[in-house]
Length: 436
Ligand code: HSE
Image (tube, rainbow, N blue to C red; front, side, top):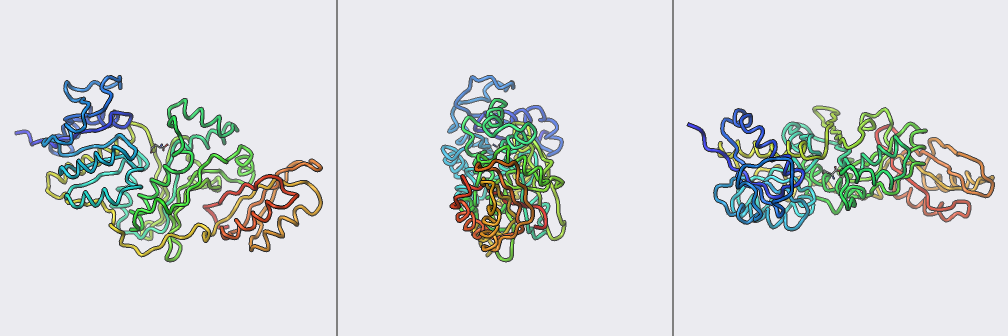
């Protein structure tokens, strides 16, 4: 006799919804063989039931009313793939209230309102799967929450936004400016029509919120993450970085220093022989350091219908297994309000190496003026390049510093930017990944 199926309803039939449905339908037999019982795609709800998505659904599966799906007593797992805060939040809360397990790829919703959502799941003793919310094909949620449970993690950082990484790769390989690279990313469908979240680092900060909570047991801290995007990066900085032996990448960093956690997203210079420097295009990579495993690096596609759909399926399968064994009880590994007493470090207190690009008039005493101010703020220069010679006109002067405190750097640059020999604001980037 065939064992009773676990029934799934998907809300949102976009790129990830289509990828998920394709896997569920195509791999139906395979999934049944692996689980020992079938998983049945009962409905997909979307406001647009007409658009061609390159997939043939069985008659009656596609509906336009999410309420029907949320109120259907046959559906065990609701998969939310519409994204954004509203109405995704109301839909998820209703699904939880109705006793349904939820799978979501919605990093913005979890990062910004996760506490409420996870509380509701615990109250209703149902599960929330969110593997698809971070880094698509890299099962980093499972890795941090389950596979590395025997480790104390001291450091987790990486490239977790494919769009920004595509743009920086394009700027590096083809020496084009930010705007040109962004246009190309949009034409290829990598960046949204409104790419703000990707290029301003917000999407990375959403994902970092989730990773840091799992890795360090801290509450969701999205608002406390220092977030800086890539819109100010110029081909000139990429070229200088390369002359010093570095690449520029948008990194999301969660690092324990003493009793504090640094949480920051910003463009970062990394030595070009570091493995993360070789992560190009829309790929993601996440570095984790644990006391038992030492350093580990995970690499794969961070976006797209099929890689993200694959992560959704893994959550559906886990929950389906737990439904069958009766092991579901709101276990999601997020600590409410957090079991750790680690504090978030103030950005001004972080210590890192810096890349500085000044626009300075090329005349005697300029360098001593700049280096004098840096020295008076405890900032020590490691190396320097000056290009070109234009009397009375500004030329770029570029310096790499040893480790310094952010607060000292900000103060020193304020003073330097006021010098009459310096024109325009000084560009500065933080450096990671080596002894500095
Ligand atoms: N906008 C995201 C990215 C998609 O570019 O990585 C997946 O979260």
